[in-house]
Image 1 (tube, rainbow, N blue to C red):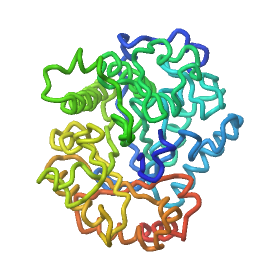
Image 2 (tube, one colour):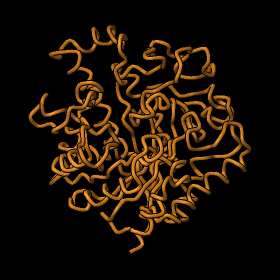
Image 3 (cartoon, rainbow, N blue to C red):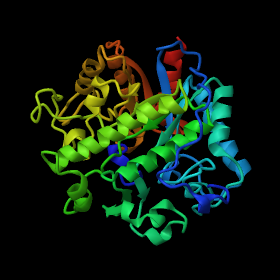
Length: 408
């Protein structure tokens, strides 16, 4: 899912979109190093973050078409709330669906801002967010989705200058959505350029991806990458191996290019928690998950840690603390991830499903139990909560309780 419970939800250039650069063009010259903003935490100290989702106006803006002043006021309120709750980082979704929350040289303005993809909102949301977050001592992690194009399958609904319309051969429909085809080298180059455009412009503290690589499986449907596989995949033992290599290349290449564009910017990924079940692979976790990232999303998350391609991993451990009939539990997944990162230099943060306190009626102390379990493992260096709207709601007083805990 991003988040199993909301998988269905997750799925400008200010007049310059028509002059959009092609996949072969380079991003801007390297910017100065990112200035670290650690919210008062020392190097390697505890991460306490919140995701701010913009896709489908999930968290922010609260509705499309608000005035620039209203959008900014809502954003500032999220940042101020984070400070009040003793959080020290925000993970802002800035490329929700192959569009942008900054005046991109590659992609149109995001629809979530004005309600019209490609329409200039009259301000620079990402630039403002970076400045305002840093002014409050908050880290700003820029959250991108590499391959999702739209949460529908009709290219004509995209702005006419959208790259997906200019390059229809790049796009595949699947599960009611449109995706860029990860098997095409020109796509991989383009999506990197589009994301790194933001890194070249702004001193973000990190590039952040969530759990969407190849799409989650949809029963009865086929992700039709036959042509790309025929062209590029014949040296691999299987289509699955080729797909995993495509994802590996995206991760490795992006990691290298971030450092070239702006030194000091970290690279983190927040995958679905289960790499593989132990019944599938002895290196896997003692779980019985229906989705395994290695097999179903073609994302070898364990390899990225072991190879040191990323700076942090933030698995979405969106499960109750104890097994109690669950296929997956927090008390099983957290030690598995602690063991995975041990000795690699890759930081481990834990994605927390705050929303389940409402949607699945988790008890008020569920996340407190999570904190207690994580505290037993020095490799667990913090937590990130999904999501900002739920943080604002503070279900059952959980965030208030956590803020008190952090104040001690």
